[in-house]
Each structure stands twice: as structure tokens, then as C-alpha cells.
Length: 188
Image 1: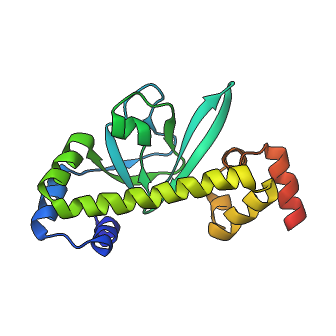
Image 2: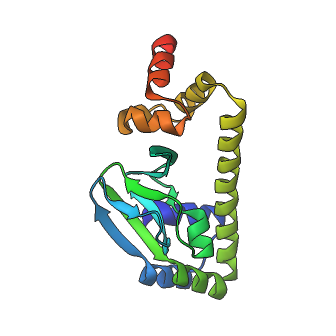
């Protein structure tokens, strides 16, 4: 639980009793790449922390596979609307690498929020951070050129190109693979 512990404690220190309770509810799994963690039409029943590995969220639009999010070590995997509303998901979540994951079921998360008021601060800060990232992504998709989006990704996460197939990166950046190849050729 090392990185998860460090992230939570940095946001708001919590007592040992909380960590004992959390530990008793967490499920740790090692899963192979291509594992589908969530299938469109099912309800997201857990929030998952990536200890090691990489995942993507995607949906289908007009028979096209559209990557909406890439998540890696120290990120939380979640279908936001499905998890918080407990309704069927519009997206799929798939592992792109062999991964080590820690999950907590929805009910147990709510019970921890109720029992430990300080844990609500942690949840709020994490939610705020992901909301900010989501807003930045929306801004980027609406206001930046394809090249600007590519350059931003390279500057923020240069190693992503060694870990994620180019067709998924192109989709994530809102462009066709040919466009991404042209941009990469011009930038090099």
C-alpha cells in the first residue's frame, strides 16, 4: 500500500485505526494486460488505485474506439458517473500492461467516509484534482491545435509513447493515427 499511503498522508494525515480499517477492505490484484476492468453497460462498483501498470478508458462512437483517458502508476481508475451514481457505465476500462491494483468497493468507501471525517478531505482533494485534469483536457480538446495537444502530451508524459499503442494515443488526442504520424515526423 506504499504509494497510496504516501499520497493520502500527504493530503491529510489519518490515524492508524483508519489504515487498519482501510486495509481490511482493500482488494489487491495482479492482472494481465488486456484485462477489462469495466465493461460498458455495467456498474462501476469499485475505485481502483494503480500501484504498477497502465490502463485506458474508452467508449465507442459510430463504431470507432475512442480513448478518453489514460491512467498509470499512482492514478485512480474510475468511471466517474457510473461509480458515484451507481448507474451503468458509458465506457470500458482496460489494462494496457500487466498491472498491480488496489481496489475498494463503493459501499466500503462510503462507510469509511462516514466513520472518518478527515477521510472526506482526502476524497475531496483527490476529486478536485481529477476534476481540474478533466477541465484541462476539455480545454485542450476545444482550444488547442492537434500539434499543441501532441506537444503538451510529450512535455507532460514523454514516456507514454513507449507504453501506449499510437492508435490509442491518437484517439486520446482527438486525431487520426495518420495525423499523429505526420505531426511526430515534423516535430522530430
